Length: 391
Image (cartoon, rainbow, N blue to C red; front, side):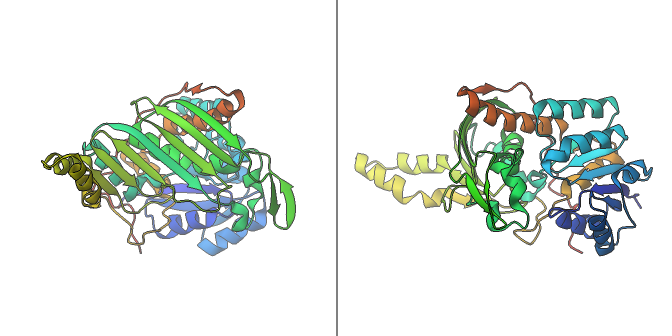
């Protein structure tokens, strides 16, 4: 029987509940040995709820020799300082997104990790789910030809409408781009490769928000709209907003020379993948020998027949909206046990942080930002992969 990798968790806030549920109940590759939080009572409550043997201080957790990987679930503003502590303590690091708030800080963290031969990555791990994995397979198989364009969109009216503690979303390090952008950026990088340059505009539709009954001024833009160019040549748009009450914008679509792929929400692990076969439509229209108007009719009436939901070839949770957070931590643990490279990439984590900063910089200067970092598309999951099991 393969041994389990010892895991420590720092931060017992809202997002911790789903991580702890999954890592203590659904994944066999890790054993959660300790939890820590700035507020000792939160750590104690989490340990009791999930049957974790120890609630302790951060310092005690980092000194535990049985803990090999540390999961940082603190707020984004604390990521850099906590992550640095973790790495300097000689522990592998998995951090909630983003790895740091500043590009230079993310680079420093990865440099420390390399010097100590440690893994150092950040969420999201949603791209490891069946939805984006299947989308990648559609692109790699050539079904849509060479990617030439895309659109990525996350719009809502604001997290203060539902979140139990929404204040930090509107402070520096928050906002729709830093909060939700990593899901879409990571998925796009996984599908298309590294980004070449970014041009962005920002706005604050409602600069005063009602946060738990108090009228509060936002510190960050609440709408970002950008044009992005990828090294592969694909260009497209990205909109992240807390100002839109309703929308019919797609979450993520990639357009190729032969067709299109409609991807599921990158904030989810599953979801249908639909492929549009442009070559099929071309064949239908080319077969029409009547004059020009008949070709228009053939094109319009056959659009639907060119769309087909892709057969999901990757391991998929039976619950469509299943929240499988912890999947990336588990892949790291397997990589550690198998002596392979983690599919969670330090280079991608840094590239995403630079891109987050690039949106801000481009909006501030009015000029396109040329990316300095780069990365490789990480290896896909195997189609027989079965880390996730409902028990």
